[in-house]
Picture: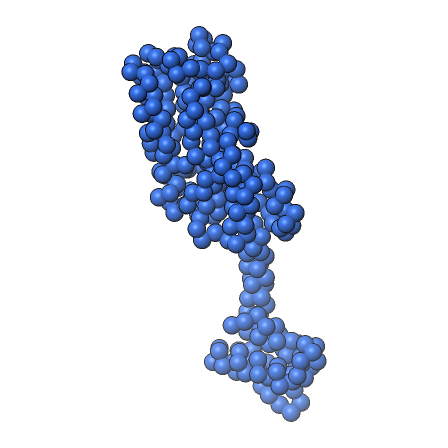
Length: 294
């Protein structure tokens, strides 16, 4: 059933004739009659009594007038609700996944796509991401994102930074050397957090035979807070160094990087795909340094 048939039906009911409805609709009388006949055929009901003086509603027709109004109101509400999806990109955002690239490019993107808008959706559970999320940013992690149907597009690289407690002797340094990690408790993400972490783990173990490595499955505020009070050094992608006291975040002098980019659904909207392509062109494998680009 189509809305134009319902609108035609209501106009015929209001005017009491096919010709009156046709005049109001700027169409022929025959066109109106064809739509009413189609509607009645679809419902398998007679909605109007036809006479030489016009038409009157049957009992079924009187009931259907009320239902038609309800259907049209609901249809209008559905159209309004769906309209936001036509020009809206739903971006996942959390303290581990700030939309750095998206916010940097958005005003430029709006100049080309002025009707576009973004709705941010809080990422509360990384193991069960909302189906409404079109894309979000982060370092490349095979788990848990790829297994939930997201694809990954590399746009940049992120180096590591070290977070430590204020009592640590190394806190006075501007930058840590690899030798500074000897006999230290060092906390790193495991392979399920970031794909390239197994390479970093191997690098640390090859360079420092007596390093003590501990792994975390998921970076949380608790992990960051613990690193600022315990006798340990936490290694995180540098764009996440902003989660800690800046005086406790130090650069490292080894050149290991983690892929950073966009997670997106392959079936995302054409508008979303345009944004992804714009970001890919603009950043083209740049390097992060404390959330900024080198």
